[in-house]
Amino acid sequence: MRYLILTLSAGLMLASISLPVTAQALYRWVDSNGVVHYSDSPPADTPYETRSIRNATVPKPEDDVPPPAATAASGQPDPAQAAKDDPARQRNCEQARLNLELLQSDSPVRMDLDGDGEAEPIEDAARQVQIDLARRQVASYCN
Image (cartoon, rainbow, N blue to C red):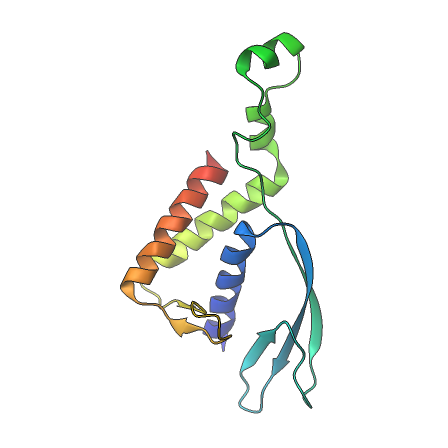
């Protein structure tokens, strides 16, 4: 049970880093076998909890950054330093590092890669793709 929740959490966190800002309803319920399910539509004839998800994307560092000469001439603070101090960027950095650590560990990882709503164990090749993505996210958010 703990493994399923950890896997779903990791998958949701990875996905939330790359999505635009949205607010969605998410439904959570536990089936008769004790398995926790999450869906964007409520289950039929089963008690469920409604949750709200808010996803945000941090712009790339090169977006909206004036040339160095324009920054120095305007007397405004350095945009690169302001980006490093952004709390959302710091949270994304921390999450990207945690995702990378999880993917590089020996523990099994499950993700819904085919979109059927069921998390399946990922193969070594898919894991490597996710590791590469997590490394790029660390480089983008943490440097």
